[in-house]
Length: 424
Image (cartoon, rainbow, N blue to C red):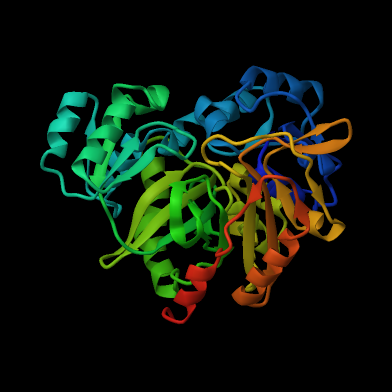
């Protein structure tokens, strides 16, 4: 089979490495891919949001199956365009991808169908949002309605901070059109859990839970990032929590989307908060998370392509999906200065052992050399029988990844290790 994977980050590298395990896969094309992905797929310089270019390439190269991984092309309708051209795809269509494309839609969906989430208000006028913030409980959460590269969420500790965030989004267009509508919601407290799930629109199969580390610095300090590392499974996701999530959140969400005429097929990401009142939805994503994918897929024991095709064909209920009971840890190495400004163009080298366990997020090939080309550069993952050993091995392997100006957190998994002693 000839496969096409849309995207060019660490998540896509993890997906491609897993798809390569299927012996029927003859070729994988990554659009656009990156310099590190080039070791595992043929990279083609067509942007992830160039829908017309993607479809043209797929038709000209006889692609049998496409995986659309990032949020932007999904929300823009890449799956719809590929399907119209007769190419089978993994991922939701445009109508279903709105669950991430509009936070206002997602909140209203949860309210309508009784899915537990934070209380909220939606605003399209700046003056009304500012008036509301005069009396809103503090801290509060301000969210840009649309996609904002994972940066459109501000946890405001003061009214002034909240008003500044709203003004930046609505008046100053900090996130472009994505911030023309804002959601202001109740601040929830409790441990966060990420659960990716396979779904064919009727059946939903949760993957191994994970714990992301969003802040740039150790001990959860510094600015929010796209993620500085992750571990799986998440110790706060107990069997009882998992049961409640399936009954109160996962199945109701899938049924709600079908009821709305927006049947969701692909990977639906549930960002959860385990509050004193039980699990609640913080956010939905219409695709695999990054870097959660880099710890979840290494624990998948059954064939990824077979599962993906089952979500497309509506046969997930009859398809085996099995995960290892081991633990995984991913350590991200980033360019100093990320998530703000940072230098690029440093030579990236890896030992042979490290390369086997590393997903490249931001690099380009120039004259046969890998050069850094992004904020997050690599994610190195280890799998082991225990979480403590997975963490130790991930850091050992990450020592084999070298580039100037690199920085990384040194406490990935520390919070989970502490929780292991507190959560049975």
